[in-house]
Length: 92
Image: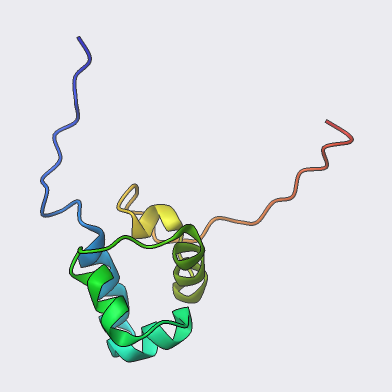
């Protein structure tokens, strides 16, 4: 039988991460919404957990906050953004 990791739900929460990242930069929801080209009410639904972010929005926020999508999604506690790497498929 496969053991499932024990995760406290309140710790594994994207809305908490989004709010924390925003507040660390003293930003208002409207300012982050402007970065994503959406209105403040829509962004608010992400922070309250009523809607999920698209991959494009996750990438945009990760770039803006200089972190990884994994960090935003609580898949890691490592804040550092990953280094970009391009694979030369012709040599592989």
